[in-house]
Length: 367
Ligand SMILES: C[S@@+](CC[C@H](N)C(=O)[O-])C[C@H]1O[C@@H](n2cnc3c(N)ncnc32)[C@H](O)[C@@H]1O
Image: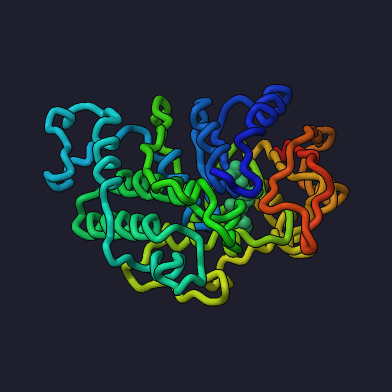
């Protein structure tokens, strides 16, 4: 999934650094998990994983890709979904694929919250995030998941797997240039394609009890124990809650009431999800507090921090914060050139400084 700061392409870099440092086992915590790319990779490497993020959509992805260890059976779904009784014994992808196939046939003639708020037909042409057909499909699938959940026909694993599939397929057909703070004026080829759910590919083979949280990192760190703490905080002033508001609405659903939305782009209020890490002074203070708690409360041994050279917290301050809590002589900094995430092209309001940024991985041993 396209996501600001997604580390999928930097997993090899993180692995190499951990290998150099001799960090090979223990409980790994990814506390700014986003798409959960790092958490799921560490799960596949055999670590017991704890992950968290302030956003609901991230929690859904964390659950689907990290907490779920086996393909569920979907045994309580109605007969018309077509789950075959012979699947009852084993944990195979068959039932999940069958349910995904069923959901892909759902349509909602009238459309619901997404159609009425984000599609041209439902907004008198004011918003163009999805085609009318795709908006109605998202509504229909979300409604079906809520109905099944309400009727207790889905386990947590089943529910989050299907919701993760909906989030990823929604993102693939969104008429945006990477983030949801604006839509494009013409429907682009990706948005014109029919929304199609795909079965999430699970990481099986590491059956430990992994954990997922939707919680502020500075609060969560005081409530867990981990050996390796991986930090990947926001590195600029752009709030994730504003940039991914639509995914957040789909993750939360609207069975208990539709989100209040406003403005040209249908943003939802996100005061409660504003991140301190997206402000210059606040970010520095929050990081210092987090690193201190990692040592004092979480009993963590190794601390790794991803940050790039254009981040709001200066490299010098990061070094000081880590050295202040670390064992002497253990501070290290690894660097790698990386292609920049662009959510739009250069223009009057945004000018990127070239195509490359330097991704840094800071390390300190704190116990
Ligand atoms: C750079 S992204 C992480 C990307 C992730 N490593 C990936 O590969 O997708 C930063 C994440 O931090 C989350 N975040 C921001 N402030 C937070 C906070 N105070 N506590 C927990 N998560 C926070 C954002 O929602 C976002 O998902």
